[in-house]
Image 1 (cartoon, rainbow, N blue to C red):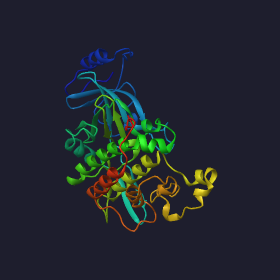
Image 2 (image 1 turned 30 degrees about the horizontal axis):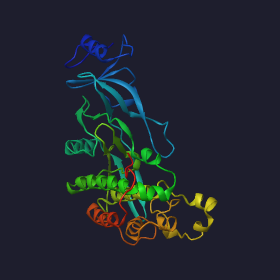
Image 3 (image 1 turned 180 degrees about the horizontal axis):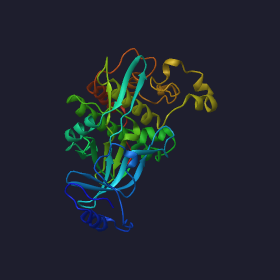
Length: 335
């Protein structure tokens, strides 16, 4: 065990680990890390010290999208807060940049730890966001210290509802839509304060079973917005809406294979603006979808000539669509 820096002696840290280890074995030796710049060197069992705070490192988290479920995120670590033994998620600094294209709009996306820290401060009292705090290590890296959310992904819960779409749509969807509207209102909260989520995806919504509320996670992405400051966020909201209306992704290939008559009615303009293999004009597949709801979906299709400029505009149309739906007769909730 290396000498402990700052506010902690090596013996004190060892005693703190022993106190909060539970059934886990307490290592005789572990590294004590103040500079997390090389996050690959932060290993299982190490202790990360951030000023007057100390955290015992546990496992990595995993990527949860696009078939990468087993891909470790080495910069996102499960940890034990040695002050009280509570579970935390530590997000270390990882810089990444890529170009995103939505229709004719292009966005330069990049990770911004400082932006996520800023939003953590902003949403500290908001129920629909993850909560946490942040601290700088000795190299000035902004480490985010996130509260663990006990729960599951919103879309995983949704997938466990009835497989019959018409039953889902009439009995469950009104309640699911109410939850979605609450999530859009949370994004409006950010936008009204000049902030963006930056990475709106359905796997970035967790249902907190203790608080019984859906919560947005992972807002470290920022983007250079050029024409539309909130365009990428709004497109992400549209992608999620298409998913919950369809009770899953309605794929062109599946329709070609299993529902050829419907496939033959499709045009390129009916497909998703963001994913050309997904259908956005879902009324062609499910004719009982009300016009007011389907019109919203078409804003996120390849045939659109108009885009939402704000969450307010989307919420106005969602209110009309919600009023046109039949009252839920089942649980009306993805939870």
